[in-house]
Image 1 (cartoon, rainbow, N blue to C red):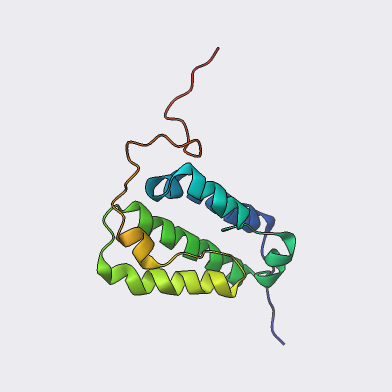
Image 2: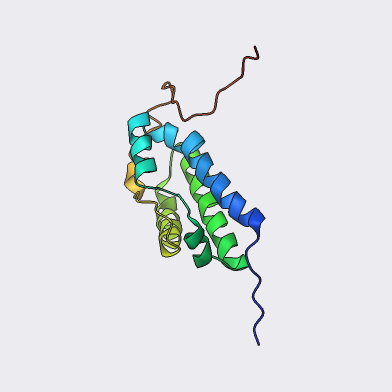
Length: 132
């Protein structure tokens, strides 16, 4: 007899939160707003209820969360060393296996040098808020 623990609503919320983080903090470093809008149309990193069924166990959900966090760490580091290429590919493959669309390859990020650091994206979080 094998006991399997189901993923928690908190884990599912964390996966959605990490996907939003990609759109607000990671993608604006490498892509312009038109590209990011296209990613939304293609449902990059979007999850639907039936996808949560694919990683319905505690371990599966944890693996998806870990993959997303690893990709964020690699992409936010600025200069992406070649040694992270296999790690990048492995994590993208795991997301794909769970039905999460992340259609990028390593060179799309490694060849880029944070080209939009001076670019203000509508997807990026505001640096501060003005209360009226």
